[in-house]
Image (cartoon, rainbow, N blue to C red; front, side):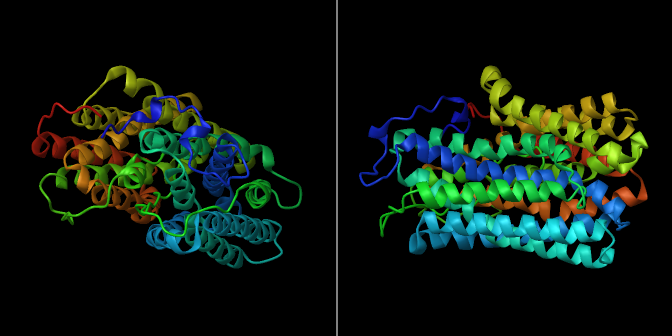
Length: 447
């Protein structure tokens, strides 16, 4: 199955949708689902971009922030399969509403607790406890919306058009990683300071929630054959791979794949290494910008957002523009992407000014943009069609694993030396190259 069909244009045609009782034209329904994904991803990444400044203002240990996000990622990864199974019993609309309600509650609770902490009305430890609670809500309930939105698209599209539609929907996560950090510095509000971004993005969530309640029809069939889907935890500059798209479009798996299956083991190992490298660098880059530029937190906030936005844009540039033009094989994509990322990360570790930080980090993210779909495509093409759902689930689990351990481990390394997380991540990408060279055979299949 081609893994990079997201680059094909998806044209809406009512004849492709099996929704005779739908209250909306399919294009409007898709727009609402796209907005759901975009709001959740942008709000999450906006918060990630703000937390280096907030944690310094609250005088919290840097690693405490990372632990909160690691816990959220763990909850997301473990709860997403549960929500996927609930689609059959509850229907996609109810799960989308549940996910949005959880997202809004998380953002507003985060704004309340962090705002009170920044104002000095509660001790920083209480503000941090509230932040952890808000992230836990997001990790559990927020994970309900993406698989439900994907399931709705899978349900209401013909098989020939399903992959393109799913890829377009998944691209909302990638756009969110740009929009969130770009807008966050503009939402620093009086009284609650940097926590104002959580309020504004929470309000975006409320507006999206109202649109879903008013405009999205509840017309799911009671019984339908649909593969469960779950989305990886949205991180900075890390657009979800095509794994969830494959799950939604493949027939039910009749064979249970082993993790040590020699066909997929090297691909998954390379993905696990690269995923941790990306999570480590994504969590620590904001702190590196803050410390290397030696500016007061308020002045550094917009610059952190700028670096993160450029990095996310570079990642999407590789996936949306360069990969379809170059026509690389999955093995080549992993090797090429790993090399570019390794160089970019090593240069980022030594960068001392805004221009160097932006260019070097963007270079590393450009490499990750090749790497992630490369190892996903390689794992998919290594097995038969009847095994696609199983291998996609394993790829999704590998993607999520990096954001469970990576952020906290990266901040521990950062406490030892600001350059160390990026140097280690660079070495890890070298390890991914070695694994691919030694254990992945040359193949004629293109991604």
